[in-house]
Length: 112
Length: 113
Image (cartoon, rainbow over all chains, first blue to last red; front, side):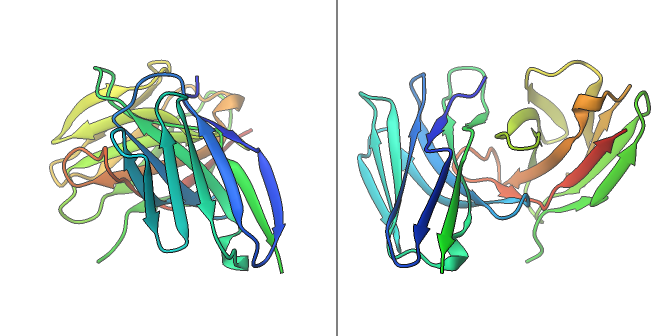
């Protein structure tokens, strides 16, 4: 079963607008990561946020984490056509069954 | 620096056959991870190898197996292929245990007819 569930499943916005996608998870975690996947290819790591952090920035990316609600959001500001991709959250918890657990992904389309 | 490489890019098999997928990690990376991504779905964790040993496996039947070689490259074997094994198989590597970041290869698209 998936630890993370992204919302929405698909999102289309105009170039230049901001895109927000959300991830919910079920159990306590050590960190949460966001990855991007272009056209069914390999994933690229975007950003990591630890369980004791609430917000992180990297370029046009902003990630928040609310451990009380077991949720995270990824904001991409000033979107570009090249941001068109699927975005996945992945959680890590070191409670024995060590692995990254990926969510179902949000398909983001940027309309030029 | 070369990234993670996987071969073959595409693989077509018939039901009941065996498939072998290969992965070469980034130089210096000792951990290799395998994931299955069925069409339109997220990634399902398959296997984790570190220093030649299987460290963890996901909820997959025993016909999914693999190994890691002394040079840290890895092989995923799927026996007795079923139609639902059709998927993109992704390999990732990391320096030590990759719970902070994993580096992914382009994947092998397996089609079972």
